[in-house]
Image (cartoon, rainbow, N blue to C red; front, side, top):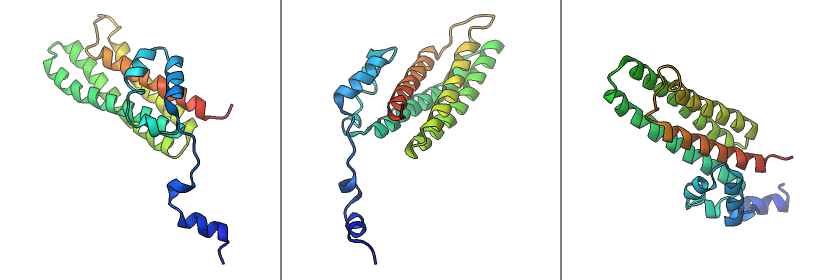
Length: 175
């Protein structure tokens, strides 16, 4: 026979039995202030409509979701950039970036799944690996002959979003 407590908890909707603290505007502002670019955080994470009702776990998912969106958008634009590049070195470099972004997308999607499962050490590893792929893409343009990356702004946005995720995860993990 099921105990009365178990029966009651099964009868209540899941949302009714959770007593989680919502992140709140003040906490999000505090997280933004920890980042290297608080203005970027305020334009991205802090303005996301999902933030208001999110827990810290939810904030981690939101920040990874924003990163996945940025990586996917950049990956999509690489195809059109590749068609506009005519020199062999430029084609090779944007091809490397295309492969790097494919790998980065896979890592951030894995980070999302890990975050959903509250496997935050895995999130850290996957965010690091995905970010390193984007950094590799950025750095390939710093080799001879040095040229400006056509997706440098996008690369830096991914790096900033990754930082936000790591700041949030740091708040979640016990110290």
